[in-house]
Image 1 (tube, rainbow, N blue to C red):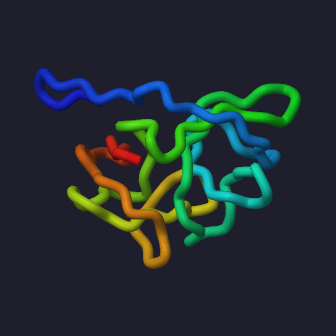
Image 2: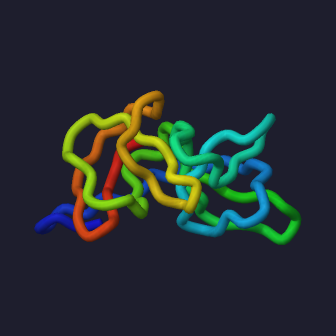
Image 3: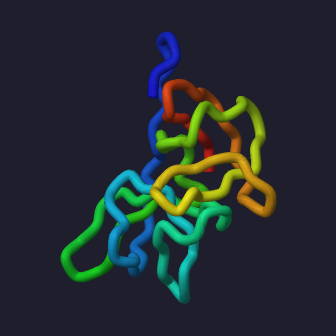
Length: 115
């Protein structure tokens, strides 16, 4: 995501996890089991972004420590530190009991956040 001359991208901290059926690259994910992530239930804590899904049921995900990532949002998120949860359909939103992340840029259903 770009803001003026600044470009924020991930810093190559990506892990491999088992992934639930239905999740696709770009989805906001939550933990759904041991070493497993998925879209989860609405209101579950946001933990990762799906980068790539392989045919064998594993995925590359950007988790805490990945730096700045772009993620789809429900509406426009407030800037600054927010508590983020998944919506169960691959997006994040602000919600109680979520994961504290820094929202750097937010507009038009997408946000640049530090996880």
